[in-house]
Figure 1: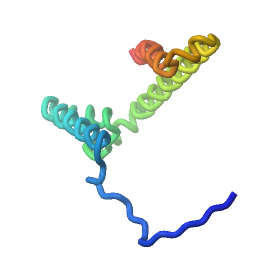
Figure 2: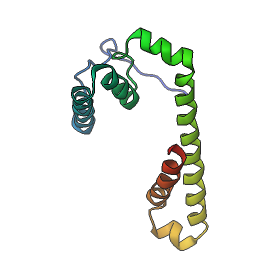
Figure 3: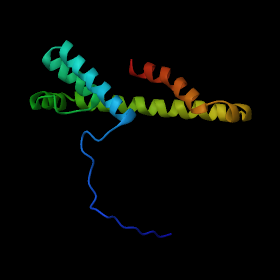
Figure 4: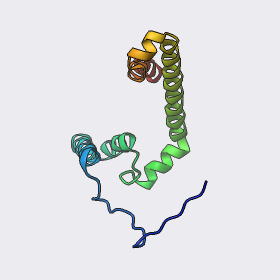
Length: 128
């Protein structure tokens, strides 16, 4: 298969304010939550907590990031997150496959939603 096309103008990346609709509302909500966390917690703790929530490196001083790296805590947090993701994936897949073995359930029930809800307790038990 082949394809072709043309453009009238050069490609441009959208600016930071280009999101609309649901994406813009979710981003505004994330920023409001981050601002609230930073306002309530002490300066250093608020920055670390906000970093854990939205994966931004901007609020953490380099000395603190180096301490995380040197102590092995950064690796530990990354591995724990990986393990939670693996447990969630396996539990989601096994529940969905189990329900899919039933013809009635496969045709009439929202199996993705059921499997996702069933995987949540397993993830909670893994992280705590």
